[in-house]
Image (cartoon, rainbow, N blue to C red; front, side, top):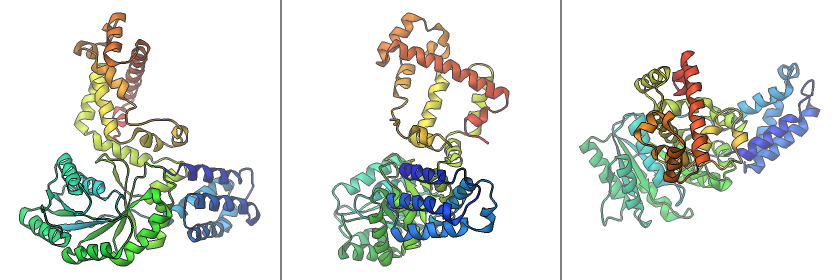
Length: 439
């Protein structure tokens, strides 16, 4: 995500290196490159021009003229303007009323149904709510069944009415059911079309009138760039939605939608989503996104993801085992499972400052730990607890059982020893909890 934009912006800032001060002359080429980078990222032309004009106005101010490092100062100005462009501050979901009704809208294929499930899981686990999913996509084949499968996966009930093709009636009845059965958040998954048409807009407007939702979220496929922004404008004119959800951020997206949509519709981006995993949903923080665009990483989000997977008691137990030199392969594979729950490995690495650029061309996917897990699972209970017993014949057996090779088994054993040493050193400094994302 934003890889090309990040590279282009970095090159533009290098044009100012070695300059003693920022002037209207030496800033011209930098701003030209910044504008090109934004346009290449599929940012609206008018927005790109307005952005660079604002940066220029601030950059040639007296405070910047006295700066000892014009390149760094320019990065800061562009960073602050990116934050403003994307909305400034995060915007919370309005779920204070009981039951709170959330209407999910968007075109077919934008990821509405998957996001509905992710949102249900999010309000349940992060906000302590008791959600009800509502299947109102009565036209797309298997849409209702898809939502039911998702609901079963996240243990959230799905309200549907077999044979009923009227989403207005279904949604109204679902809200009644929520009030009767004690559900405090109702998430309505609506039908989409391949393109905007009058019939679809009339239908979703009727659903809105019937249930009077407290939140209307417009789900948009971020890979469609300016088309996504134009679609958002048309939906907003009809629905006056409350916020935007950007999906498929793990795809080949240039970022134009994220950078343009707030300026065009004047509605905040509330969530970002990537992949099919139900955990892959995040609140949209403009400042953190600006950090990532400028190659500064997003260490705050990384720590938050880590904290979600570790409770204080588990961290304390692990620290005790490490300090007593009892850390074994059972602990090792547990830590791998926790890392996998945090999300896509490459995306996690990209949150570390300076690492994103280094891993952008590497093929790192969710199967990155597959070989390691296979090797560990091929060990006997005794071998996991006491790896020193792993002689040549045992290593050969493990390699055969895991579908790997003896050199790969040997490499893992060396990595395990190095990890143990590092973790023990961290414990001596009282920092083991930091390994688990604890402050």
